[in-house]
Image 1 (cartoon, helix red, strand yellow):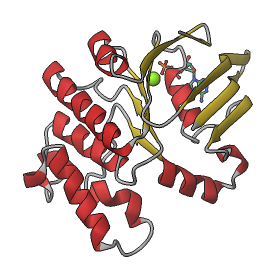
Image 2 (cartoon, rainbow, N blue to C red; image 1 turned 120 degrees about the horizontal axis):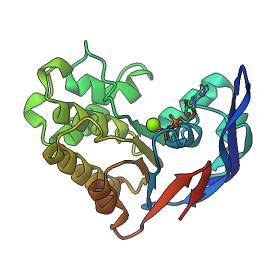
Image 3 (cartoon, helix red, strand yellow; image 1 turned 90 degrees about the vertical axis):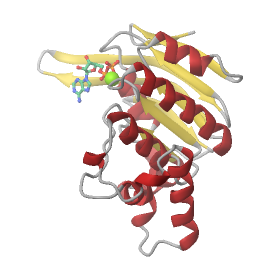
Length: 226
Ligand code: ADP
Ligand code: MG
């Protein structure tokens, strides 16, 4: 269960403090899907970064299964993120020198030798996203949609409790976008992850929020409204 209570975020600027989020509360559990919309600059990425343990809020509390990641030391927080939170960004953020399979295995490579069962899971996920024949390909040898499918597989490698996706289809053509969202929906069904996705695209929003357990929120003037 992810619980965010009264989060606020402001950034210091030369002309004073710039308030981006104020009094944002939200919670979600297993299998739920939250779509966050809002104009450019409204703080969507900032909110996702806070929810993902990447950027501490100025005030407010974040808890994932009773753990506040911002109370952990840097290294333990990084480990907590790796174990419990998956990210998909607008730019796939794959390592260009690693194969598709190695990119999917990145979350477990930090732990040293990768057990066969984890390699099997990596292969299974690439199979699930339709890239079974592309395991040894480098990102440069894949299309934009294929790279984003690798990024989705990587994010779900460790069955994270929370999957955060920041405009994951923002750079894709509409056909690839629909395919990526379809896979995202299917895979979070399987892992039971809470999905929190930011999108500008109305049809993508509907494909996620329209699911059972889906809902839609909007950031406006720093506040989250239903
Ligand atoms: P969105 O994702 O909705 O487009 P962002 O969360 O990226 O919006 O940014 C919200 C606002 O916060 C923007 O005005 C942006 O310039 C500002 N902002 C984001 N990060 C910082 C930072 N580190 N320092 C100062 N301002 C920032
Ligand atoms: Mg953004």
